[in-house]
Image 1 (cartoon, rainbow, N blue to C red):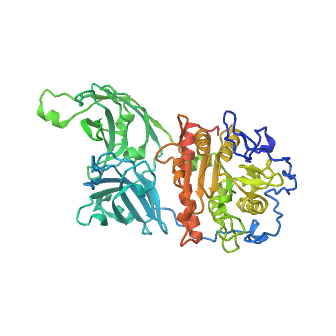
Image 2: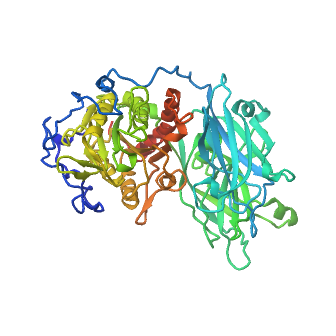
Length: 614
């Protein structure tokens, strides 16, 4: 099925935001929005006066200038990705959970606020995730877990770095290093009970223990079901001297050695002995690893301003008991505090927890959705701002040679080559931004790479690369680095998809720090309600720390008081995939794996909330 074709629909002028949105003006860009293409036409005719139209299906290019590969390098048969022997399927998936004890206390007026960064060796250390921050805690048990593919035949090295949060910065250099532990996934899996307990290493404190890290591994069950749970409390114990309790709940699953691992924490309800917590969803495999009979412990705590918590009481249950609460007429659980019970024969309980809802929601898998007709559609936007450097200079990020294509081409080839397999017609809209378009020298932030705004499609990834080579010789690099126009373009395309069967993946390749951050955040918040994911690849050596504001792994992107409904942005710096500043085709495979690994879950999350008409 072909995706929405702008030439067949009425649409906003190119560069204009969707209805209800505004684009900040940029000097020379034509005021409040981007100027439409001068003399824009369709039907394969040239869209710019004096320019030859370059449909993606017909690549008749001129001899390249200095630094550009010869014409044959832009044809469909050209492929920069040498064959890399694919790794066989993983033996299984492993869930890793983390706790620490006796961490270093590096804060003067309080205890450390630890978090853990987890990385795996893939030619170099690649971050796979980060735990939440545990405030004022030297013995943290983290709720966030990590699921990794387990290959028996490979030595998969894994690193755990513990830091004390000192600011809101995403740069670890701005936090205190507490300790590190490096091991292999096989070593963790091979331990009895899948539990490893090991001292943390910190060479800055050789005479002082850095504490201990505790790692648990468990094979992940196959269930994709989720539970929707709603709970409230009644008559909880009053734990605060000058006020009521501030209660929250912790859910823990029982391990094989009868210890417990945190799997969920509710929000804190302040000053309330009869709290009603927000309904929450939790995967069955997270709650009990698919074993509905496994013991689950639910504990209630009172949160204190210093970050500590007072235990109120707990009860034990199972997923099956929660699911069957109506049939068993089991709606109420008593919170028991064993210490208080031992002190008084009159002790009854420390309050009760009432189960208001527990329903099983069938969660479709990515493969299931694709098999039922969901299609992935790939959209590309490439940075043509002047900060890239003149394309004919070897120090330019747009400099291409036959033996060493630019980072833009490398990233496009690696990631696009994977997504191309999921697009049935392989016709991809491809845009550039931040360039002056001849002959009027109008600055555009969403111009078609083939210079045909009514039909910006290129047939296959290699023809996108060909159109890119043609554009780099035809436009003047300028600026600024604005993302919102191409995101708004993607929003318009997705809005023309009434059946909801098509999911759009926008890949933005850029060299620099974004200059329309507020407008981009607004566009991302709007896009999160549509079948859209955004991949941002940073090329070059710029400081990309601001991009972390857009990658909502830890904090959802927000704008004007609204938060994004989903995390739809994944950012990676391309330099993390270079070996001694040189491109290795194997690194392209790693780049594609890491930048795309969140995409299936983003797609599934969208279609759970917006079931398609299949």
